[in-house]
Length: 479
Figure (tube, helix red, strand yellow):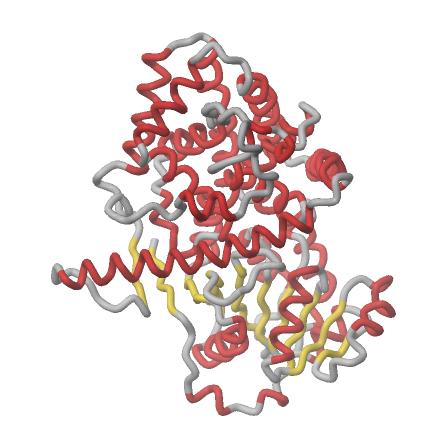
């Protein structure tokens, strides 16, 4: 697999009259609205629609924005637009493209913003006229994240070079880092970087819910990488369920990896309760060596997460001066993550170019634990010790990981929705989901800046050894 990442530059194509080009957006959910606003602010005309029952409300919402025209449905958008983007749930893409695809303007470009490209591309090939070109995309971040510097996957599936350049110019308004993949490569990479990450945090939320815990109120969850767990879990539950369901259920690679994560959680928990130190330690350390060993690409770099960052973005109240020092955690969620990467033979650093902010945080948390021997030793001792403080949490976490895996493996969208929204409502009653989003945005901004600094330092070191080049454009080949 190959992927090239670059920050877009203005070319001769930028001299075109943007007011003469119309961009259509079918689906005005959270990401559809982000795209509409960004693209219109860059000078392009935007035609947009959602379901018919939202027509009047959307017209009212955008009446003061002259570059955005709200139309009644996708037929009108498709007939009037030069580049049409379907920003709908992955499980609905076939139905929506079947309805509006045949109305597409002659010679237009069509793309989608779904998280799973196999059903999207299949729908385009089935329902779009043959004269229509296909350039798809996927912003690898949520609607509340600043897109500047974040990965934006662009898929040239069926397109002339001229149309591809137009699509790139339109998308350049986000200031994101372009990553060029095929649809199949995209689905493999998103499975490797997103599916299991989401499953881990969904399982944490379900476990805290089952134990009737608000973790920020519990001293043992009040420091270090516990802050990452709490912040990201609440951030995920602040979004809509379908953001995660489509990627997990419709992507075959994601389904198998989520099942492996549940198996890793279960296997490690069984070794914990049976006090099988030899096998538990062998399995944990072998996985750690595979992902973080001296042979791995980032072993020579500084840790992405440091104590200052971890404590700066705490969701918990500061502990009293006389409070007991929090006990070491078994970190079953992290140990199982690294074990599942090992079992699936996934090297997570291979995908760092097109990783999401949440994946970088989770990889950073695992790195923080595994690359500091004293912390990993304390974690292993806690997992195998007699203190039951975290074992009760680990039991519920194991149940949760298996339940999410069974829902995904069975393709149960409605069950996924019910389970997600039940836990979402549990956390919502404390009124802190938006606070988690705000804290998470600041943490993500800090992590993005730190990532740039670490990459620049590594590049400078490589150049000093005669092995490096500039970091503006990078060609990475994966086995």
